[in-house]
Image (cartoon, rainbow, N blue to C red; front, side):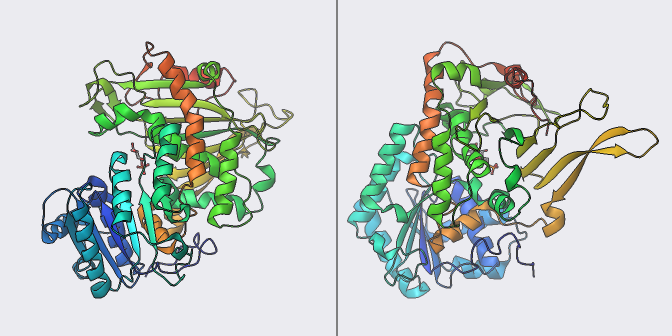
Length: 518
Ligand code: BG6
């Protein structure tokens, strides 16, 4: 048996979720096959699922429940982190998997669903609790929620006590990103959601928050006494956050043409990393205490007026090149991408958090597709020593850097300067390196496992609250607006397999700094 993960201890009680039926709208899509079902199967393997549990897939495509189960089995076999598939666990699990075919607009779909759910309550002990997962295009959200409500499939919020032991059955909804496409649409969507669900029933997913290393940011910062006194403008020179990918748009050209990297990665994943890095200590780990602190960071972000965008933001688009020795096509050659597309596949920004702790400390962030390496990391660069006591070859001593490696080589490193052994004083940079894999084994749960289980528990800390999403868009909107205003200027191209356009280097060079080469 695997040892319990020590990072979880104390952060959250180990308890199973409440018995429930999970209903996946958009069950024919890739997300269900690649992420949701493998996550549920792995929860079944680790016996973390509630005792009464069932899944109902809902989609337009005609197929029998048997066909649906066969497709899901193939998906789990291919994408589960645990291989090979355990036939006994799968056999048990699939007994609770069913499929409802119908269009999201048709009231009949919901009548069929209701009958199915009542049957699952009787046969699988799901206790009347409902966890709806909207893995559909945002255009379908409103109609699904309205129909659920009209069919009497939404319990009042009062039942949704955080521990799930409020007595009467609860209803919760998980909503996939993208949550809106700008501030106005996010607000409209929030209003629509609020017509059916109370905020305490709403779980907006950002899968980055389910990653072990992202959860560990809170533990690292607030369960160690070492860092907090240094986590401050007095000691920190600047922060760099990188979310780089080797992959291109992977057949999602149509989606990416509407989105670009800024809305796809920065508005959600990257800004969440920034919040966890910069937030004040919360008074507790309750969902609202943590999210209150994150919202304060978002509110303190210096807004980018148009003139600021020019000076602080660089975008780019990948051209042909080589990624890890393999030829890669340019963005404009990808399927469903306009030949003259101006959509950005790379963005770098200098951001400021205008509050007491961070006044004057730049946060340099970048995200991009088809870059040299897949890496997500947060690097905290401390200030240089105030006086150069030692003569180092480059005229200075390298500053200390603390790197929190989110993925793929999960861990953290602290770089510092030492004396090389010998008769003369020669300085050398070394690193203390901690690797999750070496310390805890490499089979860590996938983000979706943690997040689905938390939703079953009614634990919302790792989900984004309404005001958080709106603040994220309030920051991003003016940047996109500024680009729209200069519609004739295409983003600079960068070679696939590089670290982005030269302009990104210039952004830091102007401040006498350099991007890390992870
Ligand atoms: C998704 C984006 O939210 O995150 C994708 O839509 C991106 O474009 C993906 O590739 C990255 O997730 P991860 O977990 O592989 O870092």
